Length: 265
Image (cartoon, rainbow, N blue to C red):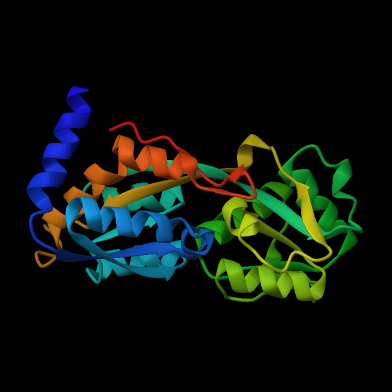
């Protein structure tokens, strides 16, 4: 109760007048549709008008390092921790999670049903040389994919034409995979919100290695004095509040939850 009152005090004190905050977020978060639920409530509770720049995690981190945004929300822990360690972010706060999944043609020509781990699933795709679409954009999803290929012991740069690096966001990459009847690694939220599922389905999921954590990082004013530090702190207080928890946990598509709130602050 005391924590909730403290959060509400911060929100009330900061919400007296409207202000703008620029936040770079992953395309997977944007494609999920959750932002459409959260942003109006953030504006109502805090007065913050949050402007989203939907890019891959790598690009979001670059925007933060350049001071082009006030905060970022991304999903690549190693890169996030380096961002803070190098002084570009003040702290890393976990907000919510879901998981990565491998989707593909329901006929499953690579026989992913035989796999017991994500690494085995990708090894089967590589061995069969069935079409695979990679985001190829240095996003959090792409970083996860590359780490999995590394665990397989193969280098995507040596793959043949079956490997399609499209350099696009999650929605566009899913559209390409659907058109090609290809396999693809995606976050669950983007898949659930994807409209063109004909002939495609989830073919592998459930490996703990596919855990997908989203974290919030304010940009450090010591590097970029012009950033909206107060607004970033206000948004962090809201994102870790019981109000945010209820909205995030309550967001579903076709009865399936897209994210699980796990902020501890």
